[in-house]
Image (cartoon, rainbow, N blue to C red):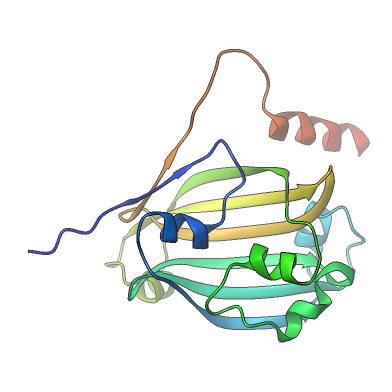
Length: 185
């Protein structure tokens, strides 16, 4: 019998799925499904850009060992990420590639995590049984308060778990940001 170890990610710091897998002793690979220049009004809004702004987009299947773990989609402002159009994103993290082109990686941001019943196509991509469950992770990464990355990741719930360290008091940064956005309208 083969026992598959769950990967665990602490939510208290900016993290990379690539680094999470490697920290747990696994081999990480990615298969780039799509990459290019796109306009995406929803992603542009999250990044604080015009609806029709040109964005760098990459969609990858992320695997731990030989098994699919997540489908990851990331949008970055094109003026920041243009060199990534030709970068090898199969064996490294997006953050490592950003550093290699002299772009600062996110140093603050937020993740929103929700359960997700995946559709049959996503279940097939991730190697889940029909009706399988996953987490939907939305991330806004910023560099010194300036949005640089909008990301959505569908990650298998049977292989990945999140750990949140907390202390009493305080209001979430996401709640404050959403309140500010609703007041601007």
